[in-house]
Image (cartoon, rainbow, N blue to C red):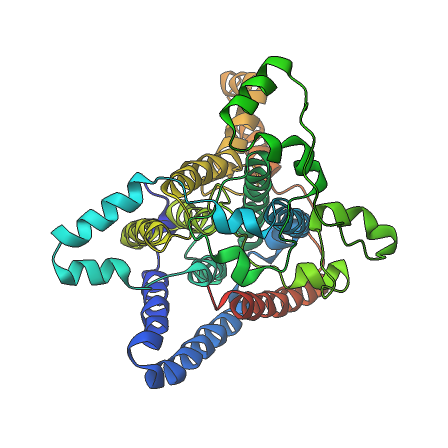
Length: 425
């Protein structure tokens, strides 16, 4: 049986679909998009602010503030580690390797090309259309979290946000560890030359341990037999080593060139990598949004979001941002990770379990009072069960008011920041 809040308010689903539809107008009618998009956001923000004084779960939100902040810091740390890893795996082999190494064979790419010839042109155009991208999924989740103000999902909203960010951080760390372990060529061979300023030659470590055995079958056979790097490396240009002070240890990982400046400026210019980053980060965001929406809200909207996830997956492969394996792995990793982090927030009502546990503890006393026909004792024991979960003293009303205002201002600022940073997909 679905929880009551999953279908309590159909407005959330309509707001989500309206957001995606209005944003798609940028491809159909830019003039309408420029007018409708800010109007829609103003209406949604105003509706959220108006509901703040009537929200009754601020105590619950207050208790979730520490896990929320900890999850956010964990996620930001994971993003930093991922950014360092993305630059490192792109730079370590040099531009020549990226330019000369062909893409891997991908059955998903072949299947989509074959379907282009078999499906009706209208269907193919729909599959090609940029209906939804990264920032849409982030906005859909933020709308889901804000909908707690309207009792559309179970409180606390900061609880589900903490679970989302914590799961995202775990997924990003696993992703970085995965694509660093084995470096795969990009499905777009021109990507590195167009987007990165890195040396053309490989890192000195690879000059010794990879390049002499990269393509010579006899050399690889001897390497396996001897289990030692026996070949003399070729002569390559010297590495550029700027003075980065205490951060100089990053030079071997980031491989800067003369015009890069500080390590911070180098990472600030970084975006997606230009070798295959298994698994897809975009698809991880999409799957986590769909999982959160399905558990917290349910209904026909969650089915539609999963269809959009499938549309995003085929576009990732079609446009060669990723191989098919990257999307497949991201889908099941995202599902499994979300299932494992229910300790931070869950749509299930935990109060019933708490009452049952309390009843089990006083079962003997309750039965004895019933045998003795002691109505007052039975009433007192049942009141203990009812008040057991409310024994913790909540913060003062003034603290709650300040916390509510700060939370709303911070959340709206986070929405604007996320929209600005991810609006290009």
